[in-house]
Image 1 (tube, rainbow, N blue to C red):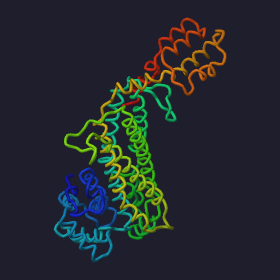
Image 2: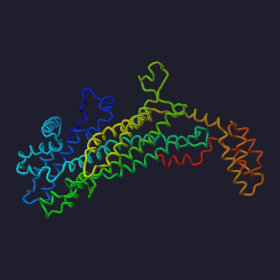
Image 3: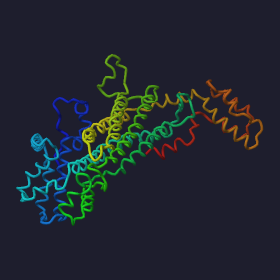
Image 4: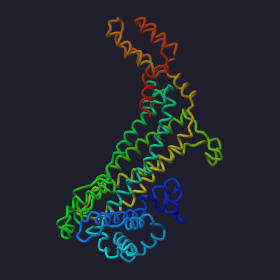
Amino acid sequence: MTRVSFAAAEPAIALGALEGRYRSVVAALVDHLSEAALNRNRIHVEVEWFIHLCQAQVLPGLPQLTAEQIAGLRGIVEGFGPEEITELAAIEAETVHDVKAVEYFIARRLEPLGLGGLKPLVHFACTSEDINNLAYALGIRDAVTQVWLPAAQEAVAELGELAASSAELPMLSRTHGQPATPTTLGKEIAVFVHRLNRQLGRIQSQDFLGKINGATGTYAAHLAAAPEADWPGVARQFVEKLGLTFNPLTTQIESHDFQAELYADVARFNRILHGLCVDVWSYISIGFFRQIPVAGAAGSSTMPHKVNPIRFENAEANLEISNALLDTLGATLVESRWQRDLTDSSGQRNIGTALGHSVLALSNVTKGLKQLDVAQEVIAADLDANWEVLGEAIQTVMRAEAIAGVEGMEDPYERLKELTRGRRVDAEKLKEFVAELGLSPEAEARLKNLTPADYTGLAAALAQEFGK
């Protein structure tokens, strides 16, 4: 189905950064979560409900619609553009009710289709929330699956390429900021790839719920009008035809639990990505990554040598803003006073902003990763300056030797602590220490040949397995 795109419409002077400075990055969300997109989805739901009732012959006297009439009704949705937005706004100015304005907007278009006598069928037995919950679910689903997920998958894929290309590159670990057992750069990046992919899996399996059961969820008006109809069945079939998951039991509103679940998962993805940004920023600061200068760009207004890690800094800030909104939405939307209040209505108008800041962050992470160059010589020099990290290997081999019955292997941890704790130990001193331990010939040879660059265990294999 081809529809008018709202993405090109730009405000003359924008209040917020997403509508102004960063509009081009988040414009795709406009087609799903803007006010215009919400109204188009409302029209879509109303039109499909009209068609559904007719084709299922739910009410006595309803005609079977012709193919031309169905196409004409769906054309109302497909042709919803700037002129129609203006017209709908004028109707709403009179009704002072957004969903009622949608009803009148559709009713005006029935006569040319030979359906003027069916104006009462528009919005039949519906409360506003029957339309709104479905319209929002459609917008959220499409925004996530068509905009946010592709952006997230692109960022993770770029990260995966870095994990694969550096899977075997030895690197000094730092736990508590101190030199620790070596790893590989690729393995550390793969940890983030694996974590982010788990969250993507959760988000991809998310159900988007919808309901259409009347003013308080009882089908009271439906039964009053057509007591013989299987209204729960009619409702389920309709919601599922929209591509949503049917919620069979609600108050006036769909309870929004699925939204809270979704926002929690997106926020968790954001937080993991935020951790990556902090780590990459830190690696840049100690020279493990070089940033590839962008032609013509200035890193500082006064220091021409600088190439600042602005992509990752921008991403951090936008991930924090996104999460502040997502956390608020998740907490607010699951509560409703008795059968209905309007706090959710105000809250849901910020969904696009919440996802927009995440999309902006994802764009910056992807671009930032493309501009990184691994400084292998810096990483290697850092590792070679910390031979004391092999103390773990030596004391663990001594433990194994003691278990095997080799004498003189007492107190291995304490002996290595005395040699290495708080001290830098070079290769020669460490090999002298190994030679004096009295290890079995095989164990002594293994340790004498060990270097910090070799002491990475299964890091490379783990990076290759999980960094995809």
